[in-house]
Image (cartoon, rainbow, N blue to C red):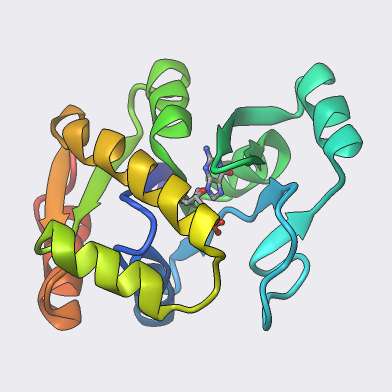
Length: 187
Ligand code: 5GP
């Protein structure tokens, strides 16, 4: 039986992590996405339990107090966290669980689960990142400014990760991720 594995995917807001994750999940049924809890309001088209579990600030605080989150962080004015429950259950089932999370959370996962494979997605350039973030049209100008500030900090930490993949051409980036996950065997 295959054993479960944790895979952390981090990268600045707007770098295209969501698209990469969706493509990976479509191509590889052995991968499972960890659904996070967040205090952020749902964006148009986001589905409860699929993209996130959308919770109130007080519910989030309760989960932190009760030790229900494997990691959590504040990001651009909202809270995000990974519930322990599904992580443990799925890795026990032998699943490879993908965590799409920001830098602080990735550091907490590194400390708690040093065996987790940690990947960082880089934009081809700073200008392109800014363009992508704006062209989503999903965030206010102040939210974009907060996300750009955070993006700078995250990119500076890219070398903390086991592998870095540049998302210029989607197909090339996917192949890069697949070769880390399935060919090189990770770490
Ligand atoms: P967004 O609001 O764009 O969906 O996500 C903002 C940031 O929060 C992204 O960088 C995303 O990877 C990160 N994020 C999503 N879920 C979690 C989580 O459970 N924990 C942490 N630490 N970050 C998360």
